[in-house]
Amino acid sequence: MNYATAGVASSTVVENRDVTIDRLDRAEPVDAARIVLGSTLVVGDVRIRIVEVEAYGGEKDGPWPDPASHSYRGRTPRNEVMFGPAGHLYVYRSYGMHFCMNVSYGPVGVAGGVLLRAGEVLDGCATVQARRPHVTRPAEWARGPGNLGSATGVTLAENGAALFESDSPVRLEVAESDGWVSGPRVGVSTAADRPWRFWIPESPAVSAYRRSPRAMSADEQMG
DNA sequence: TTCATGATAAGG
DNA sequence: CTTATCATGAAC
Image (cartoon, rainbow, N blue to C red; front, top):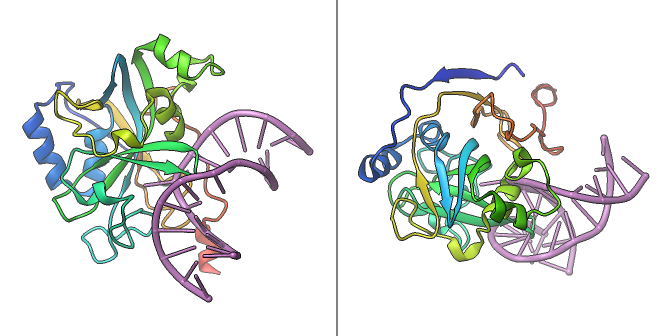
């Protein structure tokens, strides 16, 4: 895929809460995605290193119009969290059966979210294995956004959780990733070629790229 | 490679 | 009411 670009990050230091929230509040979509990539998601005794994310923008009239975003057509009960303060968890039910997680970014009133697509289970393996009894390979426990939701046990009950508060049921510990790659987003039927998917190339938990069958290719658009 | 699954939201 | 969607696992 010729969309791929790459970069190298600077450190592996875990940032403090206020710095992280401030960075997310001011972030553009691709900045927000790079902040979240490489961080550790903590739910109970389960710790998962996020190795694949996608940036989603917001409203048609906002700073990052994105027809593939749930918030493109305005505020609804489902996407409310995307419009709230940065650093909160937006959980949605995908295709009626899976729970997928996003990290909100941008100032209050401006919608934005980073979809968590895959991760490596660092701790709580027994808990995850119990939730995913038919999956034996650890690399596949949290590969794909629906599987990540399944591995963590997160549901709509955790929607809106403050990811940087110590008493939150879902938390995020931000650290810089060693390196990253970007390419087109998965599964979206519009703006599919926008290179807003980011992943850590050496990770075995990165999900396979699967373009939406409804997404028009660049060639088709040209006629 | 295609299909069933089935909540949420938009459009007729 | 009908159709599309930030997906997955199983069937073909």
